[in-house]
Length: 310
Ligand code: GLU
Image 1 (tube, protein in one colour):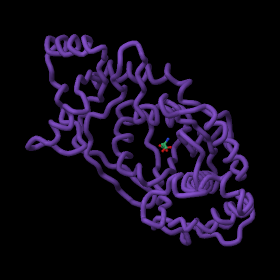
Image 2 (cartoon, protein in one colour; image 1 turned 90 degrees about the vertical axis):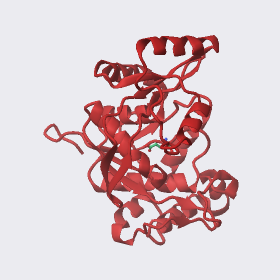
Image 3 (cartoon, protein in one colour; image 1 turned 180 degrees about the horizontal axis):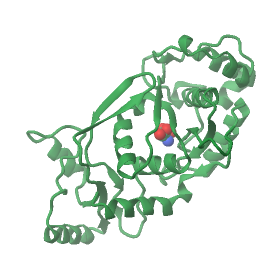
């Protein structure tokens, strides 16, 4: 698809392997594949297994099998985030050298309390550890150490808000706080990398310039785009697609019944699941993913959440 004169452009699907993919995940994967293929991009698969407590290799393999069974095609090797720690270390070093990194000693409780104080904004980090002196840092670090803990690392943001472009939503602006780029944790037990850092570093590494994903992440896009710009990465185009909801209007989940590919295939067969997926993106009666790809019309695709009727 790409020749020597064209730069690589790619889209991706990036599931977290914490269980089997359900209808909503499969629909997002299908849409990501359609958007990439329709725009002449490569399509890459990345397994986001940095959350060590929730990720299981067994689920990663089942997710890959399910996506292939649907007929989605991927280019290149599957990338596992658990193999990418060196790249995340390098990105931290870049941030450290450009003065964009600081240690944060706050507990969740500290942050909650500070955010509910006058002038605090719920959900935003109030900057408690941003301007500490070296002595204050040494004493806070020592205090944490006595509890057997190590500090988190945060991005020192230089903007109040940031704007990105989304294919459906248009310009999206969100306030930017000092996001965590490396979690704190118990000393000696290994710390988890932060999702925001990993996603931005890997999208750039994989040459991804189109990010199609569920619109629950729409308001995180400006923070990720900002982090990418601080790291010197090229901007990406976002396409946030509506989620699949259950009959009660909540985000579809495994507890909503037979919603995984394997469960659904037991009653309607793989072909039946493909037809349902096609219908959910505005293509009736399709019998293969290729057919959905050919017949998909952006104008027929609803921007309203799709309601799962079981
Ligand atoms: N791994 C995330 C999820 O499964 C998706 C992250 C992304 O697409 O940027 O929800």
